[in-house]
Length: 328
Image (tube, rainbow, N blue to C red; front, side, top):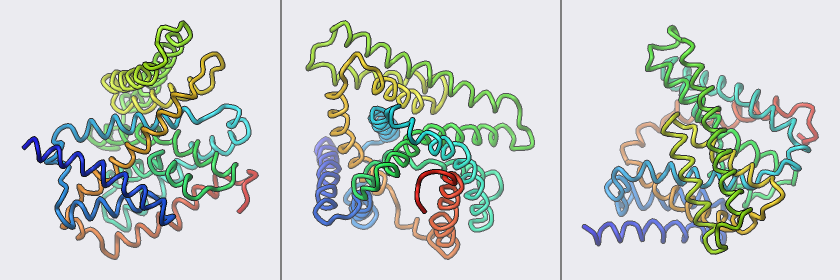
C-alpha cells in the first residue's frame, strides 16, 4: 500500500511537470496539456485514481493549494498599476460579475434544464475565472500590458467574490429556497468580508512586523510566510466558509504594496511553488473524471458551452469595458 501511494504521488509530480515542459516545447497552453495528460492518466488508462490515492486529504490539499496560488496572485497586484486600470477592473468585478451570473444562470436553465435554484447556483460558480487558469494563460498568450493587467486583476480578485456568491446561493437553497430569503443570507457576505479582511490584514501585519524587526532569518522567511498564509486561510475558513480565499488575497496585496520590507524573494519562491501546485492540481482534478461522465457531453451541453464562449463571457467583458481605453 505504501509503495502504491508513493508511485501515485510520484506520478502526479512527474506527469504535471512533464506536461508543463511539453506545453513549453509545443507552445500550447499549459492547462490544455495538463488536462489532456490528466484525462489519459485517469479515466482513459486508469493509471491514476486521486480519490483512492489521497482519500480525505484530496479536498484540503486542493483548498490549500488554491489559497497559496491566490496569495501569490495577490503579491503581483500593485496599486500603482490599479490606478491606471482600476475603473475597468471595478466594472468587471461588479457589472461583469452580475452579467456573467445572470446570463450563465439563464443558459443553464434553458439549455441544461437544471431548474431555477441550481441554475442560479451554477451561474454563481461560473463567475470565477481564477488565477489557476488566468495566470498560466497570460504566460502563454502574452497580451498587451494593459489587457494583461486587467485580466490578472480580474482573475485574482473575482475568485473570492465568486466563492462568496456561491456560498450565499447555497445557503439560501438549503435554508428553503429563494422564497424564504432572510437577513441571514446577507450576513454570509458581510461575515465573509469581515473575516477575510481581518485575517488577511492580520497575516500581512504579523509577517511585516516579524520581517521588519528581523525576527526571521533569511532562510526561514519563505517557510514562515507559507505557514502564516495557510494559518490565516484555515482560521478564516473555520469561522466563515470560503472567506479564507479573500484573506490570502488581501494578505498578498497588502504585502506587495508596502514599502518598508522587501518581499521580492518571497514572490520568486511563490511563483515557483505556483507552477508546481497548478501542475499537480490539474493532473489530480482531470484524472478524477470518469468515463461514464461522457454521457453529459451531448447537444445541450455543447450549446451551453458555446453560449458561455461566444455570448456570456464576451457580453460581460464588452459591457464592462465600454468607455475604457481597451480596443475592440
